Image (cartoon, rainbow, N blue to C red):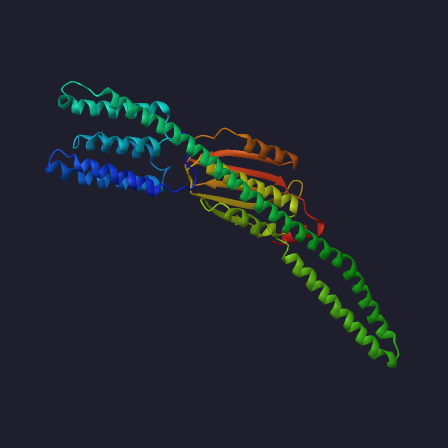
Length: 383
């Protein structure tokens, strides 16, 4: 297959109209009643094949093209009209992006040659070369134009996908910036106000024990208020800390921009405190894997696994993210600009991007060191 069809344009009505026109003409010019009856299942088989190709344009391309080629030949044995070449025109349009120019020329030449051989006696050796040349030119020109249309639609589709991903990333980054500010504010509350309230509570408790009977009640009330205020500050900080993780929501936002590919996510709960810089690395990795899968494979599903692992030798942590799609692969593909850019991004954060084949599956993986605030390390260890 030369290139996959990625656009979402619906060719159903035009294809059905062409099929109906050639079917009526072929039945009208049938050699006899018996050949007319034999044509009916052929036309229905062609209709079923066309429906399959329209709905799944990138699946079983070689089998579909050979089957369509065979059905056209069988149909030519049952009718004499040159309108049967409409199927040949449809053939060149349907498989324009999948078959090379040499294969298209071979298919067109083979069908026209077989048609001439079948009708040679009827023509009494006088082959209508003008008709054959016109149909040949029309088929090849249709292949060329259809191929350019598909390429243009694919570029337009990819541009729309890139725009959706860009908008999703912008939305994600704004939300993550806001959440980062909330996290910083909660830390400041904990580190400053929380500590001072604790000291105030301790001093009030000490003063209450040393106070006279007249002031004990007032000091007890002040101590209770300080305790209540300290608990409220702790609750606010805890709630903010629990709500700081936007990574899962951010990735799901990116996934929703690509409905043509089912995305599964396994995100470790340990990464609930991942900061904006680290989260952005993961978002860019997932975007690049989705884009590459859509461009270069026929996969329908991709699975992401994102986890954190500890390095015992230096007591540091690594984020490990893998992506695996559901199309079998036998060789590691050549790296394009997108993957090279991903390698450069990983190098900037002292990480790395690797690819390998295991059990006929292509595994894309990134690893990079996890930078955590000191007061968050204990929470990861606890998890």
